[in-house]
Length: 484
Image 1 (cartoon, rainbow, N blue to C red):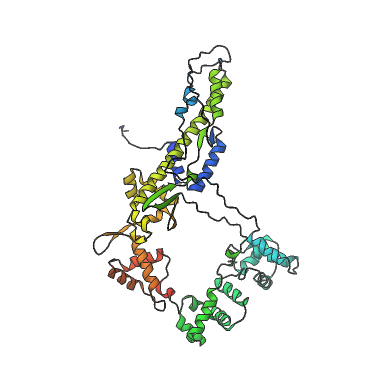
Image 2: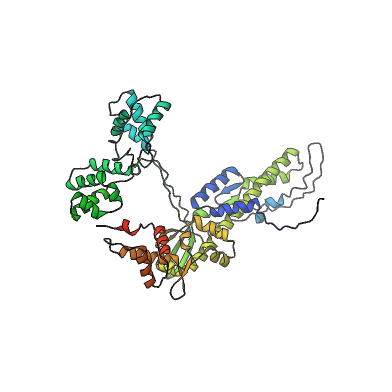
C-alpha cells in the first residue's frame, strides 16, 4: 500500500544575475576587460564613455486602447521606467576610493616563427636527399617545447613507416638525429638530460674543466645528480678544486634548451595589479585599479527610440515587438552596470579589510609580522560569504611597496608558539628559510636538526611538519643542498 506524506524542504537557489555577479567578482583585471568588451559588443544598449545629460522625464499615458487592425494594447509596457534618468544607475570612476589610472596599457607580441620552424630553417643548408629530409623533418616535429625528443628511436622508426611510408633502419635515424642535434640552441633534440648536457659541453671550448665535466656526466651521471662528491673524487682521482671547477661548468649549461629560443610565440603572462597599497604619511592608502571602474551608461539612442514610440499615437504590432526588444536590452544594460558597481564595491571592501587586518605587515614589509588569517576571518568582518572572499583572493594581485603579490598569499593557518600565542605559518616558513640560508653548505642540516633549531627559537613543530614546509618552499633535502 502506497503511503502519502508531506515533506517540507528549505532550499536556496541563486538567480542567473547572482551567478553572473559571482563570476564577475572572480575575474582579474585583464579577464574583466575582456568580459566588458564582450558585453559591449553583444548589447547595443550599453555604451562606454561619458554620457551627455538630457532630461527625458516626460509624462506618459500607458492606457492606449486598440483602434484598428494594426494597433495593439500596450498597457503592459511602462515606458517611463526606461526614459527616467533617475532609474539608470549613474556609474562614474571619480570617487576617492579608486585610482585615476585610466592609461591604456597593452603588451605587444612579436609575430615570429615557431621553435620547430626555426630548427627546420637551419636544416635548409644541409645536403639531404628526399628521404633524409623527411626523416629530419619528422625528428624536428618530435622536439617538444623544452627542446627534447622524448620517444625511443624504435617508436620513431615505426611511425615513419606507418605515417610517412618511409622504411629505413635505426642507424639511418641515428645519423640524421646527430645532424639535428648540431642545430642551435645547443642541446636541442636530446633524448635525456644527460645527453642534453653532454652535447652542450662538446660544443664548448676544450679545457681541463670541460673535459672533466664531460667525463663525469658520461661515466658518473647518477653519482653526480645525487651529489656523492667523495665518491666522484675517489673514482676519477681528482682534487676537490678540480671537481668544483667541473661542477661550475655544468651549472652554466641549460637543461631546457627549447626555453632559450627568443622567437617562441608562447603567451607571456602579464600581471596587472587589481589594487595598489601605498604608505602616505605613515598610514596605508588603498586604491582600486582604474581599469576595474569603466564609465558605462545606457545608450541615449535607445532612450530616444522609446521616446519616439511614446510620442506616436498609434501602436502597431511591429512597434511593440521593437519596444520589447529594446526593453530586454535596457534591462540587461542596467543590470550589468549595477553588477559592475557591486563588483567594484565588493573588491574594495574585501581588500580594505585584508589591508587593515595585516596592517603591521604592509607598514613594515616583514613577513614575520603577517598575522594568521583565514577566509572566514575576513568574511565575518565584512559580513559576506566565505566563497565571495575566496573569489577575490584567489585571482587578484595587489601592488605594494614590497612588490606585486597574489592576495591569497596573505592567508595562512596559525600555530602556537612556546608562549601559547598564535603565529602565522608563513612566519615559521620565513624563519626556516633563513636558517637554511645560513647553514653550512658543506654539511647541510637534516630535518631533525632544523626542527630542533626552530624549537630553540620558540616554535615547537615536528620533523614531518618541517619537511612539509621545506617542500612548500621548494627547498631540497639536506643531501641535495650539499656543496663543495
